[in-house]
Amino acid sequence: MLSATMMSYWAKFAWQSHPGFGRDGEEILWSLRENKGAATSRVMVFDTAIDAGVRMTSDKLSVAAIMNRFRAGQVESGFCPAYFEMFRGLPSITI
Image 1 (cartoon, rainbow, N blue to C red):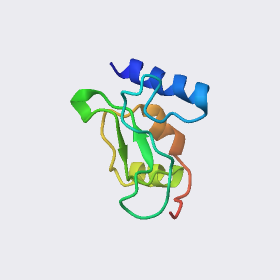
Image 2 (image 1 turned 180 degrees about the vertical axis):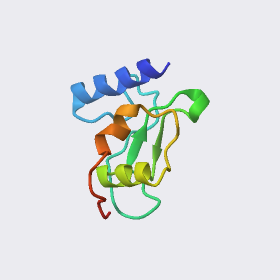
Image 3 (image 1 turned 90 degrees about the vertical axis):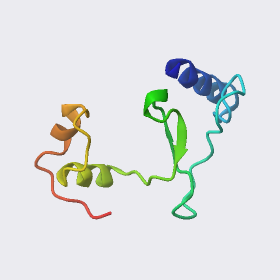
């Protein structure tokens, strides 16, 4: 269950200042964020099993990148309308 996975990481973080493999030691490794190359895992994605599950990804995320994806129409229709409203009227940001 997704919520149990998130709680496991938070418990481990509160206990040892790093989420690692979660409190029970059975989750995938949440490694430190690094910017050493395009294939470096940077971000932990908490998703349901139907949507590829919990995983580390090499996606490079920033507010500017998210804003530009919205402006280019490269976002899924299921996103919360608040995300779109957050960037409405703001100038483009170069990443």
